[in-house]
Length: 172
Image (cartoon, rainbow, N blue to C red; front, side, top):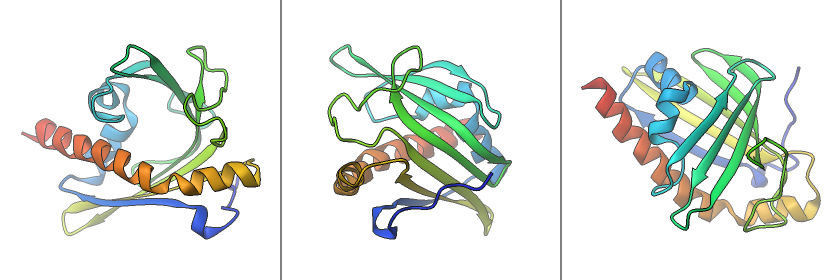
């Protein structure tokens, strides 16, 4: 099944980072619940893994525990899995039961964002690249997503730093 394409290239949120790890190890850390629970999410927000069905059509249901005590729930629905080199999934905020909901702090945030990630081996390391963009979204929702790029860059920088530290820990 082909993936949706972005409405406009300037709406795509991109991340790229090179990790001192093999593609196989990075793949495991990106796709297995026991690893995700140790590093994924914003800094200072522990992750609760409710379920992970790592199959095309399967879901990853998780909660991010805010310092206030509130848990924000999220869900990935896997669209494409090409171990250990590519992964695509639809990201959405949801209830603890997995029903879609609006972003608790941004009511015009898109209900669905497609994330497409690739892992490429280079010089004994792995280049991680991610492209995310709204799907099935209104022009207003796409504009809110685009306006959020700088904030997402800051948030994901912390998340990827946690991933880097966790990779160093599991390799030692």
